[in-house]
Amino acid sequence: DIESQQSAADAAAATGVNDEVERLRAEVEQVRADALRERADLENQRKRVARDIDQARKFANEKLLGELLPVFDSLDAGLKAAGDDPHPLREGLELTYKQLLKVAADNGLVLLDPTGQPFNPEHHQAISQV
Image (cartoon, rainbow, N blue to C red; front, side, top):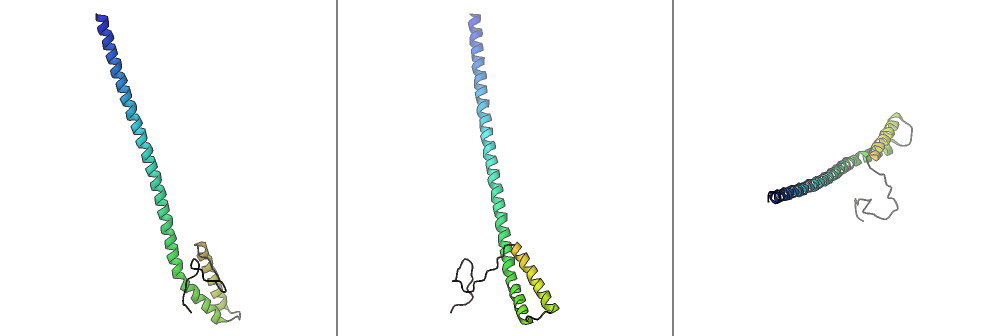
């Protein structure tokens, strides 16, 4: 009878240990799932922040380049007023214009010549209507 009690006690202990092992496995699996979810959330947040930074940079460049357009127009008008004769002032204006164009091009500005082309609202801005 002592042996049957010992066997019953061993079986109960084994069942308790098995239950504890299963509980711990489930807990480990839950922690693993939580870690994967957190990692995915962190990666999504990194992508969102990178996208937001790119958008902010794009709009900042766009605003600055838009404000530089009157400067281009003024330099262009100054070059036309200076005529075609070589002169140090004209050469300085040309050099300044070329440097400004390079900086603008490096920041995304593309020079278009719409003369003779149909109006394209993707690339042109209407100044007046005839």
